[in-house]
Image (tube, rainbow, N blue to C red):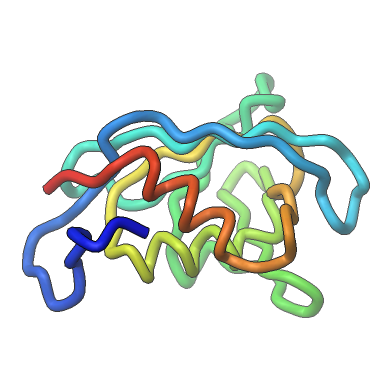
Length: 132
């Protein structure tokens, strides 16, 4: 992580400067999945977009109400019952870095597990850079 990154107790909203892309395998499905984190405007919040879903609303805004299961991972869903699981490591990285606005596109039902921690997501987001 860059030593110049100071986001704790900052009253401003933050996003990333450039898209951040990675791919990996979902730990529960075994499916290869591609993930892209894009910058977002202030006030948008964190929104996941299932790019593999075309027949109904594929956007899932992150909120406590969106959580539908938390037994083996964190699963969120929208009103159209579009679901996405294993979001906890990326969400931890976003929170730790103070990123409050991002659009996260994913082409499968769960995020890649990478090494099983938030660190690869922190590194990915750090390379993309941050802005108020």
